Image (cartoon, rainbow, N blue to C red; front, side):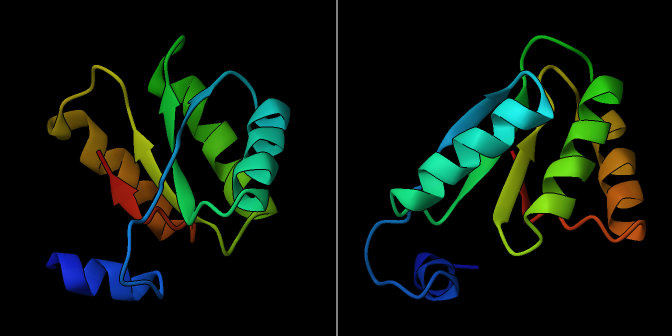
Length: 102
């Protein structure tokens, strides 16, 4: 995918802003999403900064269930692709869409 195709996916020819939310818990994450969407952000990335992937996944599922149409990327901090991709595949198999992985 090139830049033009990426922007077209968001319906813009300009800059696409995708803030990063350092996740602590689902309620606060959803409140932060309300703010960024209200300010016009096209979506966001969620990152697990203070805990492991296993604790992060239920929050990801809850956020996706609450915001099914949100463009949402993930970043599993300090996790290699060897461990990240099976988690991403499991989320996909459950119907929990992840739009990007950083």
